[in-house]
Image 1 (cartoon, rainbow, N blue to C red):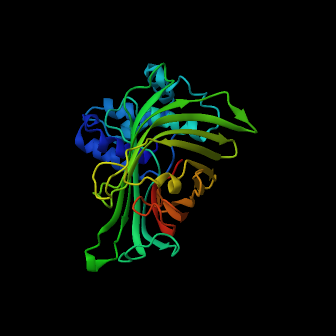
Image 2 (image 1 turned 90 degrees about the vertical axis):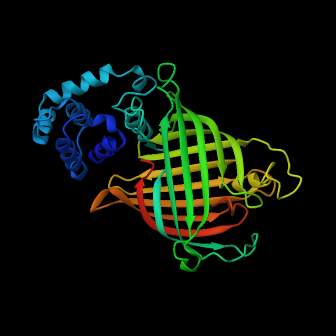
Image 3 (image 1 turned 135 degrees about the vertical axis):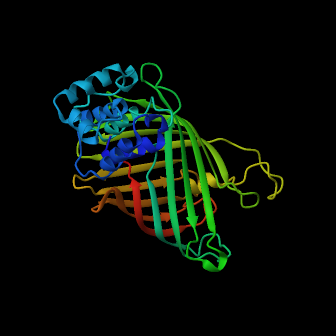
Length: 366
């Protein structure tokens, strides 16, 4: 666990604060500002030592325990005592794998009932400029082209992994907002907000390899997406979604997501609250999504997302992402995002949008 994650651990786990408050606060401050990266053994040792520390111990005393040779022994005992779910179905830690490294990190939170894990990237783009293609469906034109855009995305394991770690059930939620931050005349309204809760099961995969690429994880689940509005501006759909993730020793990764929309009955009138809000949404938001990414050793991460509909007259979209750690605050990243195509937001799903944004990111995919 990175040092800054220790601060989040105590903020989200009040039950861990059973040692003296001054020591806890000092430890959180110390670890959140530390620049050096510790080994996994030191991280586990520090968590155990803090939980077991007395009110008389200082931060230096706790840190000294975990820099001594005995720290590796403490870590070994801790890992051995955890349920087998953290080990089954996952290949040895010596193998270089972006997805398996992330999965091992997530498994540390399985027994923490209040832990929230990043699901997709979390970011804020204070500057996001969008343009609608005049040939697409027209709008009122009341919104400013310059706005703010952000995404928050988290997940947590519903239970401990099942069948000796072969299936890991999750609940996930992603919220995306388009905020007319610079429209002071209309009191800076939110133009659109999309909710996306998911129930899914992740399965670690081994033994599937081609040209150096290895399939690491497969997921299947139920996905609901809506904008929470009433008719006629209501947009929503339900899908069964499957996704596979693969990576390559060159620090390159990819994922392929496919889905099947669950049908709804047709509306008698556009203003009806019951029925299909958007019967043609699959034509614009597609049937599959492919991602390709690269994690550079110096911190750069580049990603490309392509989405396409295989239906007659189907549309698609492309998104390009770049991020890099902020030198003064390594926990945050500079972020740039470019998008072109359909389905940028649900309210505009059938309009072609070209958008570019700059901002900061809390976490990338890796």
